[in-house]
Amino acid sequence: MSDDDSSLEEIPWVPIYVGQKDPDSFANREWTSAPGDRFPFDIVLGLKYLSNVYKVVVDVNPELVPAKIDVQVGRGEPNCENDLDAAKAAHYGNKGTLVFKIRERGNNRMEGRSLFADHVGHFVWLIVYKPLPLSKNPQNLVGINRVTILGYPVEKDRPRRAPSKSRTRDRSSSAPRRPQSNGRAGTPTRMGTPTRMSTPQGSEYAVTREGDGMSTSSSGISGDPLTSIRTVKRALQEKMDGSEAAGKNVEARVCRRAIQRLEEYEVRIEDLANRRSKALSAGDTPAAERLNLAMSDCRDTAFRAIHVDLLLTRNELRSIGVGSRWVEEEA
Image (cartoon, rainbow, N blue to C red; front, side, top):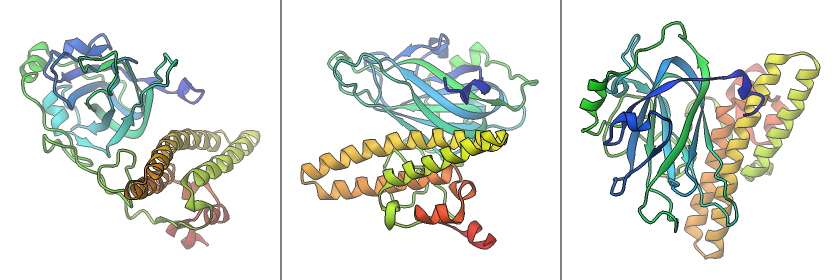
């Protein structure tokens, strides 16, 4: 756990819905699917109290690895029950996706994947996809070793009751309707797709917001998403060091969190860049173009997620090809 995470709290949760199985099967924080289970399937967790969920960390069995897991945080009505009915009626933020890769030979450790949410809610809804093709997993199982939810309790003095055994078991036989982005539970066949700026529908990496007054160009260093991400990281590192030296602890903490988020997106962009290189080597130009768009979209999403136009100066923003209506209005 990083220094920044040490000030966060681990939010207690209870399993509300675990595929077609008794939620108690996930009560010990470890869970493995059964042969013949159909993917994708849903896991719904109820938080002990209303919390600002900062980060969701999922550790998986290194031999039973899912291809990806969608994550959404939902906020129910005030004083809502900690059960599936309340989870289905909750309003959910934009979807994020944890993407897993096959380990390199000789690497026996599977790192946990983290999703930065920064969303206030009562529930965390996971959608687990089919496993990666591994020789040690002939039955196509998925294993989750641990789900850790970090954040800040909003109503710690008002803990929510755990769902009753009868209510959870009554619901375990029928699949819930999955949440739409920025809405309540909707169509059971797929999750609502957030608005994207440039990435073709289906890209697993980007969740963006329109109409926030920020724009990016493809000229200069901004033309290379990895370079622009790393340039911003260096600028924020310098700003954080200066803030710490000046005793501006809040500003330093904001910079530290922004750097951590950029590191998450940097890994995703590196993965996309590797896939683009393979597509170019194979002569698949259309796929390479799509992946290039996805890299730019992922960079833009990262900048929006950290509110880069509020952290850097006007000249710094121009150097990375970022325009901001707010900065222009202040000039």
